[in-house]
Image (cartoon, rainbow, N blue to C red; front, side):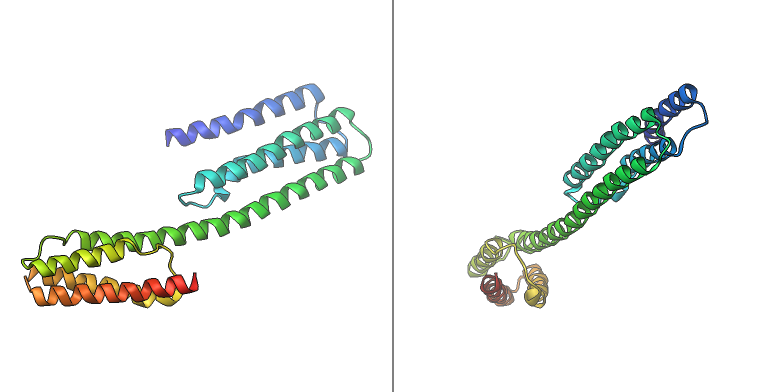
Length: 225
């Protein structure tokens, strides 16, 4: 809570300083071009403040945030200079101030929206990859925990084979193998129960089924990859 208040206060510094100088030095009577520039400067600064709200939460949020911050900050600095020029010129005609700053804002909007779209696509890809890696890690780590715990030597060798097959599987996944992956996780649970019950035959059977299903899954992934 304290940190949030400090950030709010920091954000208000520019607004307080700018508005104090603007009204003390220039008063309250201004031409339309000045008010237009005043408004666009505030809009640009507001976009810098709200940029964090546009960043999608993901493991790549820092990268996304940097690109969006760069765009918003550049726009603000450019708009501040342009707006300040129009304020100092204090033209009686508003057209030049409006046209120039609308164009600048439009270019900013195009850049910002295109980056937001690209970030969304990247975030989807990253999340999908993380889910795929999580599946392999979860399945292989569960089987690895069973290595050496069966009372039968042959059963332990089959568990090791099952682990090696899972561990060496491609992390990439496709929609057509989701059902197979579910079956593999089900067989891993069966294998865990078989090890607990000291049933060597069932351990061998379930380990072999995991190997076969994983081989089928990997073949489909490589074929369509």
